[in-house]
Length: 281
Image (cartoon, rainbow, N blue to C red; front, side):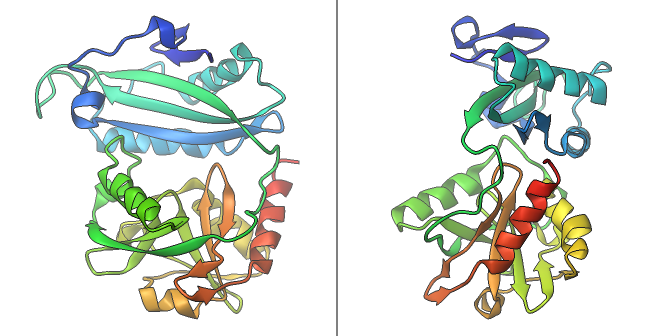
C-alpha cells in the first residue's frame, strides 16, 4: 500500500475517509495534474505547476498561500521518497478540489490538496509496439470554450468515449468539437505529420493545453526542422497524414498505426521519442 499526501499530512488508504458531501464526489468540482518522474527527476514540473494554478483560477478556487512552486516541488520530492521509489519510474497525480458544502453554489472556495503516486514501467519514454487502431467518437462533442482546456475531475465525455472505444475493440478514439473538427484523443493531444509540416489543433478549437504538446510544438519540433502549424483538423485530414501522434506527459508520443482502414508509419515518431528522452538523460 503506497503512502500519499493529503492536506499537509502523509497517510495511506486505510486512514482516510471521504465525506458524503465531498464536492469532488458530488459534482466533480476539482482539477488535477498528472506528471511523470523517472531518471531521478520530475518531467517539466514547473509547467505542470503553472497549469494547475491557471486551472484553479479559472475554477474560482482559493489558492492556498503556501502552495508555491517550492512547496509543490517539495511535496513531489517527499512523495517519491516516502514510498522509496527514487530509482523507479512514477506516475503522479496532484489534485485540488473544493471543500464540502453547498449544492451547485459552494459555501467555500477553499480546497483540499491530494498527491498520490504509482510506479510505472520503463525508465525512458518508449514508442508503442504493434497496432494502435483508432476511429472517431461522434455521440457527443467537446465544446469550444475556456473550460475545455481545464484538466477537470468532471470527465464525462472522456469516460463515454472510453466505453465506446472498449465496445468497438479500438485502442483510442478521436474527439470532435461542435464544428466536427478533430480536437484531441481520449487521453492525449493529437499531432499530424505531413511531409515536413507538423500540425496540431489550436487550443481555441477545444483542445487541452497539454504539457507534452506544448514542449513538442514550441521547442522540440522546431529543433528537428519541422514547420509547426496550429490549425483546424478535419476527419479527412487524418487520412492525408503521413503519421499521427498521440502525446501526453506519461507516455510521451504514441504512434497511430491505423485510422479506420488507413495505415501509417512511425519513423518520425521514433525520432521524436529519442529527442524527448534526450531532455532527461
